[in-house]
Image 1 (cartoon, one colour):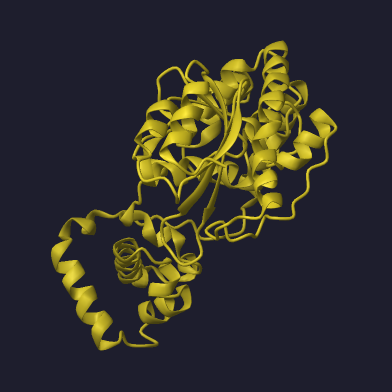
Image 2 (spheres, helix red, strand yellow):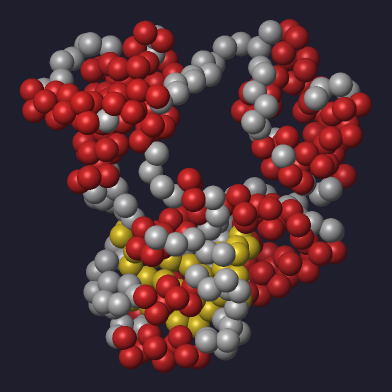
Length: 347
């Protein structure tokens, strides 16, 4: 494991000319709002190692390498790894290949685990013994380090196989589009205006209580970010709902802080609250949804896909109720569906 600046410099020297970087991270997110990055594992054609993020003071040389224009990050289920790195580096990778998404484009189960995919592609069984380890402890057990390294040892092999199959099936541009979607900066910057979407039970509230509940959610999110604590440590969802319904009064200290927050953040009044309540489909909606599902299923079968990767039930429901900012009306998905949608006069 790399734990000193000298070791890091030596490792970065070894991979200086490598542009295909298999990457995984280990982090802790139990008592903080932001993830605490503990390890970064990197594998290339020439070297594989773990970098102890907690031990190294100057991470800039690492970031300079990882965020080079020509570097391709190869990650399995990339979003949390990108997020954990982003909070330290304030940068996003320039190029990304997510092996979980690539596998789903090739007929494997959606959200297939790295272990399951490696078993299928490499015929290698990987243990899951350290999935719940506290990665901040030092020294880390040798077996845990081996477990962490296994998470990148087979990533390159998986990548090459998946990449070749994507080329064979003419889907290379699909995985490129999916990678670009994951590199949108809004995914990694907290959005206080949308904090209400994290409140369990919000959609069950009467409309007249939405604005107050949304204000409470924004306040909670702001406090969680400021204090770097889990949002539910600031105020649980149940508490927030009870305050919104006036079943309970805000404690004096919280009320004071809440009022100060509102006074300083008048621009948050612009937050849009659009709640799609779960209502039964009408006969017309049900018929349209069934028609869409059959159409999408047929297209999915033709392209060795799970139909849910093209459009899930939620996006279908949004579409038939008038929403047009749905994923299957953009990119490769729309290219697959466009002709049939037009033929059926659905778009």
